[in-house]
Amino acid sequence: MARKRVAVLISGRGSNMRALIKAARTKNYPASIALVISNEPAAEGLALARKAGIPALAIDHRRYGKDREAFERAMQAELERHAIDLVCLAGFMRLLTPWFVGRWHGRLLNIHPALLPSFKGLDTHARALAAGVKIHGATVHFVVPEMDSGPIIAQAAVPVYETDTAETLAARVLKLEHRIYPLALKLVALGRVRVVDGRCVIAGSRPPKGALMVPQQS
Ligand code: GAR
Image (cartoon, rainbow, N blue to C red; front, side, top):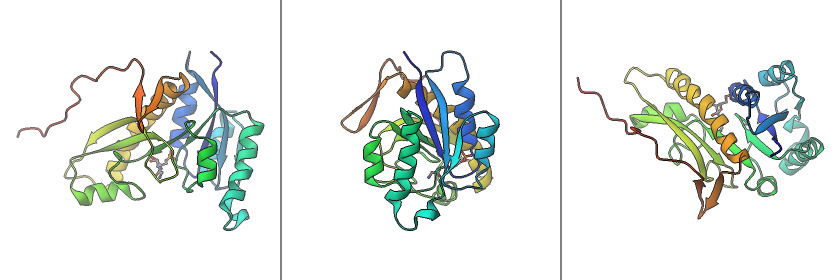
């Protein structure tokens, strides 16, 4: 089967993008990273992508004023020009219109730094600490018009420690993000993910062993 051509959309640092690039270079990975687009011309990730030999473009949303669709049409033209099959949002901090989301239905993935459906939106780590949750994590999901709400492809969890700050928790979650995004993309690129009644069904997956986390006795 031909490898899927993937575009990664970023706004900043690009560490998830880098994890996807690294995974896509491993043997038999079913996708290649063919394009990187950032809405922020100064995004660090653009330089990283170029260094990795991947076409990387800045499409500054500010040039389109309030016209979100005009910005998205500019992205769409590049996605078509590069014959992109799948789009991964990786720290892409713009809300997308129903037009763009509909155009990429079932082929548009996002990573969110929380265990959805908890903590949609921004500042997820600080909000998780304030809520006193004992487990936090990250989610890869298909994008639907409603923010942070699409069918969940993969999730992973970390314990929350009493000594955590938003920064230490973010760092622990980010390590997991770098593992689950390549895994989720692989499953989608292989055609193993079907959406049934708004939920992802993954062909050939078995329940993980020992996934339950309980507090340690002191
Ligand atoms: C990641 O933690 C990602 O989950 C988050 O932004 C960070 C980007 O880091 N995304 C969102 O908050 C989306 N709402 P990166 O640029 O190093 O991948």
